Image 1 (tube, rainbow, N blue to C red):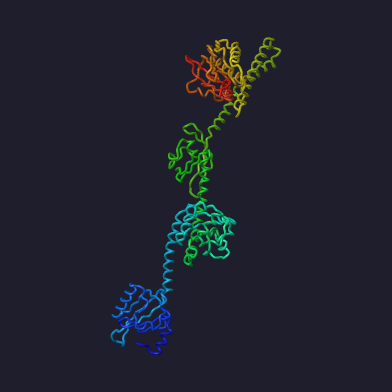
Image 2 (cartoon, helix red, strand yellow):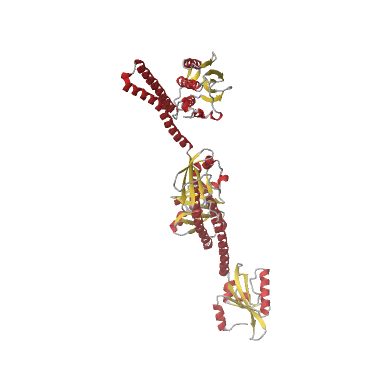
Length: 617
């Protein structure tokens, strides 16, 4: 069947190929378009089967299509055909039945053949784009699901390689005139932290171009870092995209390929740009979270390190935070305190309150609100020592006023009598009054001296003197000195003949034993034996001053060494300001010695003093 001249000219002008044949499959028409598409001439094809069928499957597809055409169907077929030069071409063939007249039987077929190369390439590109976008969505979701900065950086570098099927990837941060490698994937881990001068990098080219991404040759960039240079040599192909923070370049995502001629089209670069944009958002969130975490850790460290107890209360007054100092002050662990009310009352916001715990510890408590959350911060500190000092000051003033008032009153009374009744008094009366004034003045002087000594003993660092001296001789002198005033007592000295010298301050030790002997006499009003003894124990000498006096109640053996303390409230009976034993302890502490009070068998008290000998460790 040959077309008329007009139809022939129309067929020749068509871009698509037109082929016709009979029911036996042989070609009877081969247009100029078919020749342009396949390369065979009309002479070579006419009378032959449709040429260029590349394989058995394509042949089966053709036969099935022609069989359906013989039954009156129109069939579309996407397939491949081989050209005359042996190359394959994607084609789209539409087969239609052909009749000699309108209602006549089907006696052949007509095929319109179109080059589908671009269409198929477009379809492949569309599928590739769809696949990449789908994978990108999954990758972005994965990146945004984590707020840990190091994890986000690692996921960004890994994702670049995954999406573009690269051989390696890295994320670099822009710092001044340098790029710093922040994370790598498929590269040596020791690259992290390497600095790359910006001017030597692909990022500089990208910034100069004004584009968000580019495909480049990695070998065009000579890096001063040997590690980076070695990497560039083995991964010559490079895709790079910028990340931005607040609109400004903040870093770049590198994807590297071992194949030097790896094709990187707009699809891959477009996906890389989208990933870089998502990475910038993820990094912004991660950095904000990292700053918040660092701030919280800093605040937590400050709160945990403070000596003050700190608690945060919920709006309904239950503990939400409890620092280590709070445990130290109250004895309640974090587990015990959380979710429960405070173990002490709080005053109004901004008002400082004091509270004494069952343990005897005094707390100073201050509350402040957290406006945004409705929570309350409670700060509490131990003021027991300050409270004790305050009480000591009050006691000191009370005691000294009382003790000073008595001798001053006596002196004032006798002086007034002498002044107003001098002429009426006999010489003996005048002398007696002066003697009483002198006696009270000496007592007043002794009291002032003790107060001054107590003040010096209470200083932060009493002077320490270390010289060897004869303790045995000092004890003999002290006992003989008291023998003249303790007429109602029997003083007994039990000191070995060969007692080694001790090391310390002899004048302080003399005060110590003077005070202990004075107490022994004072608190033994009914007389009795007072024994002073000494013995050697290793590098120490233990000396004891024991009496048969009133003794010390069982729970007060430690308290007697506190400032202004007197046993059983005996101040009114025996006088004094309660500084003697405090002075003893402080003077002995200053020279490495010690003192303690012990009950004496049969009644009374022993004070045990320990001093160092020469060579003591």
